[in-house]
Length: 125
Image (tube, rainbow, N blue to C red; front, side):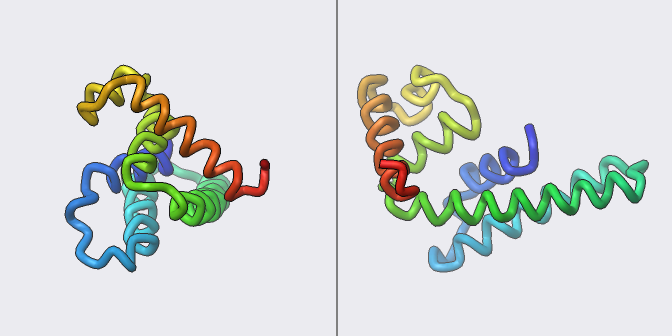
């Protein structure tokens, strides 16, 4: 799992801990920064070249996360949950159904509806 996936997972399992919903964006970015620091601590033998690559990747991850978070604003909480589980955690529809305790057909409907909303948000439709 990469830093973005780990950050999204950590945010998902800790979503009830956020006190101020208006600071969600900075909260999830802080999670990404902490995950990055953990990676650096774990791999102490990183060369300067590798470190510059990690910093570049972090900047790209941060930008991707910003775009992703902005686009998710148009979705309902249920749609957000389905998208995060399907796209970032690569859950199957069946796994999402079991996890959210809703029928698999409902999961599929929410997923495809959310994708259409995101396409419109991105101007792809």
